[in-house]
Length: 429
Image (cartoon, rainbow, N blue to C red; front, side, top):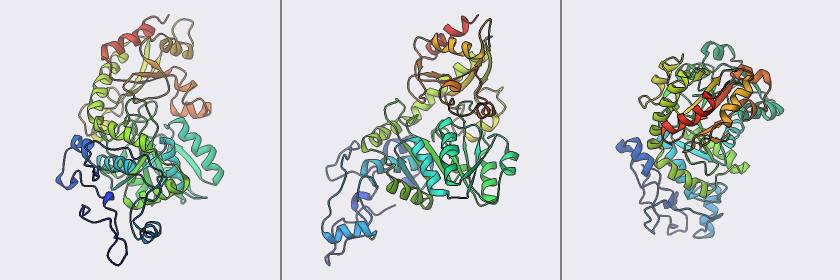
């Protein structure tokens, strides 16, 4: 642990001490092996001289120094402390510390959005001439970033099925520097074998980066399976109520320092207010994810039994081909996340798309929106929303059919969610 008794006052010879006292984390000694819920509520906070019990919001752009020498020490790196809120902020730092503790990482770096975290990953760990191996089953904006922007700067990408370990190995090139996947994936919830892909990456000197947005550390900790970096869109479950945007990377101190330099220089910074919202979200993350998963299990069972549903993509179902792998990688029993895809049948005169739209449009309670991870259940048609910007071939390869509906199961009564979906499913004709 950091020595919290260090002073932030200059020494007698006017040479500043090496660490600002307010950079010390004294609210929870993680060496005591506390449980996840305790960490989620208390880790990372440093109380100021005001003795506040709740986490404060430091809405400041800059910071004051004890002397000119103190300011110089902060800028030249001989003293660790706040310089500018584009670099660091006390509220953001509390969020970073708490998330890192939950993921089991040494450090986290917060960003302005989930896509900002992925961009930071690219800029920190890749250069011209490098190669990425990425899963085909990715969020559409991630594919767009790789193809449309990283490609312009000379970074090439090969896409493979996230669940095909042989394909990951065969796609490796001499210039491969990074392997990237989501698991569970968006929007079909496929499961990648974290340990196997990690081993493949490390055998070839590459980094393995996992987007853990759908599972969160409440269900899955990819670093335990050999991942080097974990990515989050904090906008989703970490907030949990659809209020603010944010992202984060978690990993070793060395890798996070590279990410921090990108955020500092590129201005991909998280705001203090958003960080405070995420801190509050982390306090209830474990409790919410259990409730989300309980609801999702009930909804998935209903959908699988419905005659107008041709397929349900949800690893919590025993019929799912990666159900057992998901059980191995998810440390919370019988919890598989709350995102699922289901395909409706083209009944009567309906096409696949019109049938899917009918089910969506028939809902009265469920929110038609592209966001997910909200307390409110949300539904969208990926082929015409989240994935419409990628090519038809890419959608086909990702399994995003016109019949597919993505459902983010919320915290309402499960029976009410099911009844709302039944309005459209039962009336397909």
